[in-house]
Length: 384
Image 1 (cartoon, one colour):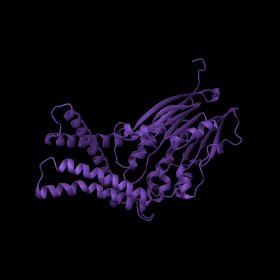
Image 2: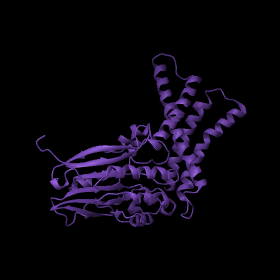
Image 3: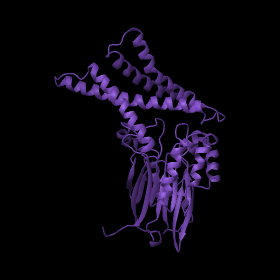
Image 4: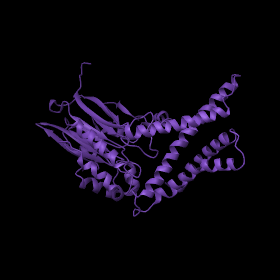
């Protein structure tokens, strides 16, 4: 993150924290040393934000991501982000309702008891969200009708894992659970659509190695997301190749059954060009591919859909958005992404956006459960 963006982010955060501090500490009757302690406690998460952007994202590769100290600090920092997000949201909602009641000439909601209710709602939301992130893994079954699907590929299944974010706070037990779930589905192929590793690969190698146990008769495919490039994508790519995955960097792999064929293609994330890597180009994997081949593109960000549609893909599989991950961002995300979760269509191209199998930052999911997608291809009924 460059200096200008860092200043903007920290300025927005500071404004939000000052709003919370004055709304809370000026309304619940704290005085003296108790008030000073409360101010300090409230500003600790802001200090953790500074640590996150200035220290965490600037660390050297030699530092161990999975050390107990790094993991503990990451848990504290990211948990505080989640707690403050809920606290800010509920406080703002209460203030807006209070303003509406005041305009309508009714009693204000701005009472000391309402603050304690907001605090309870914040804590409850965090606990529920943390439990869902850890134990709420959900398998979404999706049927996708393809117009030119040969009968040889009728019922072909793809298990999609996206945005696992293996790093300091995601446990090895969770990765193993994902592997078991996917293998129990017995998919024809497996697609990992980016942001699988969110650390230097050598520091996440042990947890990532469990993905080698994924099984599919027609291959296991991996593309990069934006987060891989924050930590050195080259090592991550080499790591996945050693684990037996087919890494698709503007490339593709054709699966044949009889005379019929299906192409699994992939592009690197847009961040590739910022680190000296190749520019993503969905058209490149299609060179020399027969016109009647079923074409599937793995692209981390849903915004590739326009290029995928222009190139003639039948289906694009993406992630990146997390479906907003937790409230209120589950409501906000739709204003930033045309395709942000589930199945949609752009002209003749289907677009499926996985909500994320893991999580980024705050270890919580609320309003957007962690997801493994099982996509089944069927022949489209042109009469309907």
